[in-house]
Image 1 (cartoon, rainbow, N blue to C red):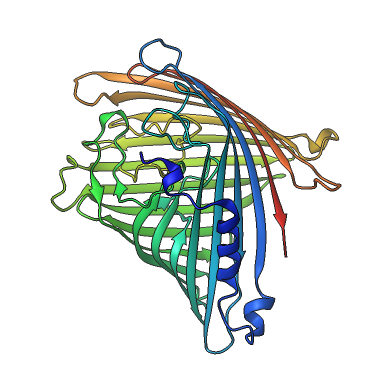
Image 2: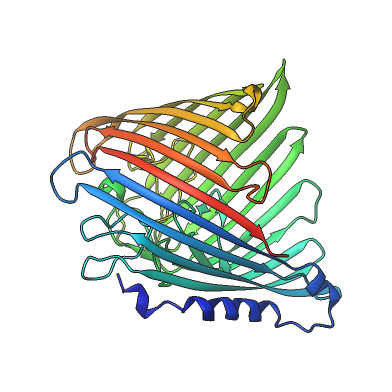
Length: 421
């Protein structure tokens, strides 16, 4: 990995460039200014992952501070509106050390040491006609076929063009092309790479771009249907079918999220065969301060699930450490959430879940294996006063596998978003 200091912008310069970008349009367009907004998000993360073994690196432990400045303009007046957004990102090392790197909180230099700081600037031009908007530049997408990871100091950022249209009531169309990615602990714009976790596919296979298109349609009260198509150039094509529902049942609310994803290889890239059908679903019932959930995930076909490296796979059993997405793997999840407001502690919530997978095909062998993960999280959000909306999250996870490295992990996350205007 290239050293971050060779690519990073100084923090003060980054901030000035971001502010200047949002003022680039003519000031005579009142809506461009009046509809603008700005916020600063600060995220502090301590992450400790212990691999419970002595071969190779057995521990990753780092602490860092991230800042994200979001500046969003309104649109110029007229039938066709123009605008520009800016995103300034800065990560700072608070604690690390050679032999403890690799948490993805910070970039790692060639000498094995983590960078003291790293920063990026993302600019996005936008054009709007009626209820249709085209955005070209930097994106942090949350779509079934490409979901940027946002679980470290700075988010993963994709570059390219995306169009969204809501001209028809209840229906939203999304489409576009993404051609570069900047990973969470990086300053470099790079090609998209196929994830090869557990040697599912050939490592390092790159794609020139990702084409995508999809619709979300609220076809009845409490029901939303989803379909998305994606083509990761010369690697795989993917079809996503989804159904979301939420209804009152008795004194509580029953919700479900059902997903079926078909992935097939395409083109001539040497990625190895991609052949996967992933069915997964989560059903939850919320009653007062309690919420109970059951999840199921089934992988069929000749390979495991295919997705872009560094991104979050859109699977219900993708959790804190593992994704349970190996070839032939079948996994179940039991989840429980509790809100302490009912006993006089508003802002405090609790979550725990247990996921167990079995019959996973171990790549390169005839073996089958099982694995499990248990996650626990407490989160507190300050309700009043000058620190209102500041949150603290404490997360713990244990992962055990017959064929992958065991791990215990702890995270402490403190975050706050300050609206500037």
